[in-house]
Image (cartoon, rainbow, N blue to C red; front, side, top):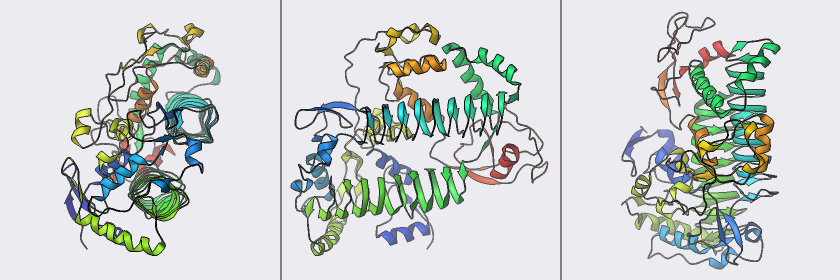
Length: 594
């Protein structure tokens, strides 16, 4: 079988289906897709509200923190009640109606079955968290587990006494840290391992007492990659870390320029074979995969996986050994999931939402410990196996057509207009930002900012420049975000400083932030590469300096396998061709850094 080029129903761009893709579709018995990979990922992401929280009342009148806004039609249960035995999702079951499209019936069921307010398991004094497990004394922590005294954290685990983290692991007393692990007193750093008492590091390992450094290994007392004695380092550091916001901004700009002059590895791949993507570890035979932790095998188009997956395509937020999953998200662990979201410890689940410890479900919502159910109605094994093929045939003969005229048959994920969330409430806005007009044009809904019922106490330009001049009464004051809601980053327009946060800034001699937590989060996202690959040639020119712009040349420090000639290697990388970074292949990079 040869590759085939299809046209995406959504973006109208061409995309290629490879022979091995057809083999996979045959294995799981679905037709080839009608949407391209990026559009499918965006559509799935619109079903994950990770960070947008509201206060609303459940059906008993109790006020809860929820990921569902008060204007949504859903019935809300608090977590303990939702998991309890005082209600049954089967009470909302209904027979399949062959005179109506499948997706209309599913959405009607979604409107009626009570949903859990948010997912915040075994939390201790950590009410304002979601998609989280085992956190203690955490605030605005999302997708992070087993953290203590951590705030403004996303997708970080086993961290302590830290603020503003993204993809950090086993780190303590850290600030503005991303894609790093085993850090201690590490600030404004990315892609670092086992570094301590340092700031402004990029891709450093086992470093201590370093400032503004890139690509260092096992070093100490370095400033912008220059070696100093311990005494010299401490003296110079006083001028660089004085607690002033103005000083901090100058250092950020200087470090950004310095980082661009260093070599960058074409992709972060550790112990991986036959893989394309970025941030991939212990993985084999996987294509176009990003943020794959702890292994994956024989997969394609993955995003954010942990603890191993196998033989999956078009999935995100999945792990714990899931296998044969397609067009699904938030799956831990599942064998054979199709077009489903939030499913755990289950087998053979299709078109279902928030179901757990179940087997053989089709179009079900909120079920636990069930099997052989369709639209939340219980069937015998024989009845189920006879009815499902008829529903699949009906989905193909009477497809759903959305407001944009796009057609959905069996094998397609839920239409965007059926999502329980607005586009800008979800992570789709983080990875594929749209304006309100663009989102509505593509069939998504949009959440306009709610009227603010507070008055700004302190304008951004009124904040003290230095942390030593900040008074205790700053706690609880409404501070203006410097973006003033004019960005497209879910800006809250204002924010407050909480007491542990102020204590942390003082202890670490850090100035107060000028942005709200959402805008700070988007700032960290902008530092990461996009979920897109380009084919490029290694920029190593042998012993000749190489740079995109004046002042960004890099001189090799060792001889390479290609000698004084330009490196002939090509690769797929998430560094776009027009970016200023100097991007090396694996062999050239290792010659310079490791």
